[in-house]
Length: 279
Figure (cartoon, rainbow, N blue to C red):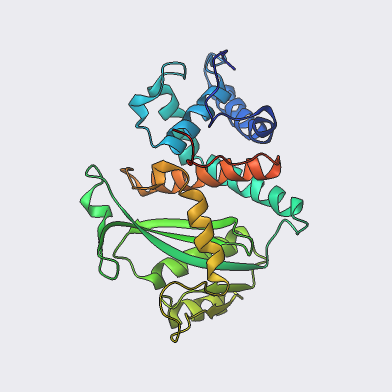
């Protein structure tokens, strides 16, 4: 790792030890395919720290500080890791470790599902953004499925006009494929019979949790508050406050990066810094 004053988003030695084996193994596979077999000079830890900097601060790639590797190099690694599913794999591995640390089994049996509509920037293709009629937002919709302590198990990003049912079905398919042990899922009232019936075909009991109609204003909804809290956790990463990504695959990768950061801190008992008092 290069010698420079660390940024608050940089990985500690303990957190890097959790992430390094996956990135190093992936690099070895690529080097084995190189005609020259010459090692790449860039430091993987510097690259990952640069990606975390973008995620945490919301900085454009070209605005990366000069003590990081060149922004083009960082983005090339980010795009390769995105396309090869490295971020999703890290999220999966760290989720299992975090669950074990909480005294739970690595494979969850229950889940909670919710969606969030996010405004898009002007560079996002019109074909991948639509108006969410219910929330009056032009942008994309993110579907998230978590375990009962709020760790993200599945996610998908689509145009905001896609129905809750379509997102719910995608999330159940993805979650069941990754975690065959899941047999229960709690969802909001936006999800209808199609999701419940699809869940039954997968061996998942889908239960719709409704708000108390007699309570006015904000209320904590049973089970659903868990996934809503998870959305709050990842929103500490400012890159997710608005969707700037051209590809929905990049949007999903950026969401994966936030819990990777949070999970690594959770496993190593390091505090996740907030934005309060940082100015």
